[in-house]
Length: 112
Length: 118
Image (cartoon, rainbow over all chains, first blue to last red; front, side, top):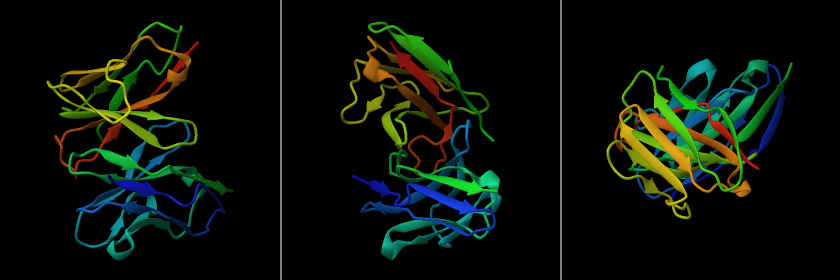
């Protein structure tokens, strides 16, 4: 069975700081990886996804993630965070059945 | 982008009663819908996967007789919590996908339903 681990439970940054959120997965087969974001009071929405090809994928709002197969990782990054990036971030792995296994989430708080 | 709605957004029911939660895809046909439960400060726990016109597939540990799922059309799935108890109080989230079983398919999430059982 697949599993997803997000090591940072709560990250607090000042505006303009750089962000990196860790995500490691455990799965023996081909992976499809996603990062979702949940802004306060809103529902989950897709930030970016990786299926194949270039391991560095770019998403909305300046976010990017890098797939490192040898490390089973898919870390999320942003060079300069904004107050509006305050949200809950979830890493997810899709199985062949199309269902997602989610990590426990990372709460990002950006101080203005 | 694709929109998924849930109704109601909040519901309070008495212990022993049943409550139905609806999940609708508003602008696309959802061949697959997923139901999750989200605990405070915890991840989303997948409860079941439903494909239109067929029986739902439940995750291990989820009681299918307690959490009845119906996916009668390509735009509607319902979750009925039967004989609800206080421990069923939680945040229930549905998601919809247009790619049946396609692992590359993006899921579109509903806003969630807060269930409180008194």
